[in-house]
Image (cartoon, rainbow, N blue to C red; front, top):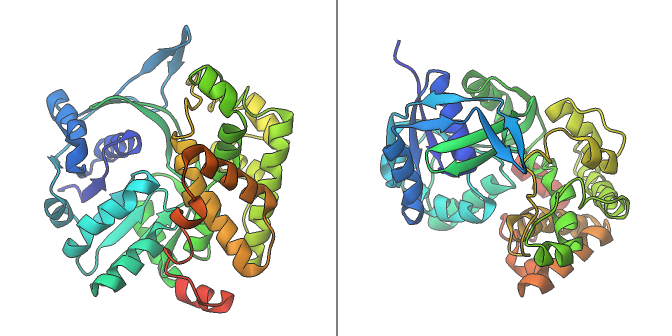
Length: 374
């Protein structure tokens, strides 16, 4: 039988890992990368495919991979039309700040009956729908999101990736939410993971645990991060008892907002059992005992321009703050981290981040938002 075709949009860390696993599972894979990062494509082409390394060395210790081997890739391109013509199953795995650039290139070439899955979504499906409406483009495309990347991975070089761990499960939802069951059927046929459904893509965005651990740790450790140029264990050392208190408060605020949106989300500690089968008592306990998240050695940010601040604050914490404000729920811990991050990077994330307006949800009520996403 001829293997199904899948298009992977993005050739960074996650794109490498995803394309590798899909190829090993028997799928024909095309990888698209933006022309500005064509070096990633050239590296894969020069390597003859993607090598998932068996082990790497960090701080004098050898780390074994969860997935390893070599995978051939059917096609590589920097042409978006070619990428979307290749398959009706599109898996986008790029940083949040790159999503709109990819959306703009993709919208003219989308076709009826295609499925676009964003891993992780971070409310991206709402953004592309707004962009399509503004451009007057009408296509019957099923948009869908997961709450996280499936992998803990690093691209060592273009064409070489190290996959430390694969999550046990992911949360997912489609936009519109009424199509989630159909989407899960499609995704379950592609990846051998457990997919847990949520009501809608508001749930997948608010279920991204990165907003709990990344921004507060990075922002509140920025002095040592800059002084040591990232030379410390981000989780084990950065998430002290005091900083974990701030993270717990942000998690409490997140759960309050989620509840007001009729979403039943897990706490951060509960989610670690779901994702990695880690049984932890608290956020601080997670930081001290996780066998995964400190394995890469010194991996802390070197500056506030790192993605833990420049991506997770405007694309995760800011929507949390925006939904809280709409619902009349105060989120002081969340707001404080956003304000400090804005000062660090000389940008007003309250205006430049993923606001309700950018999600196409401004000026409408809670009830209207829930009806829209469903």
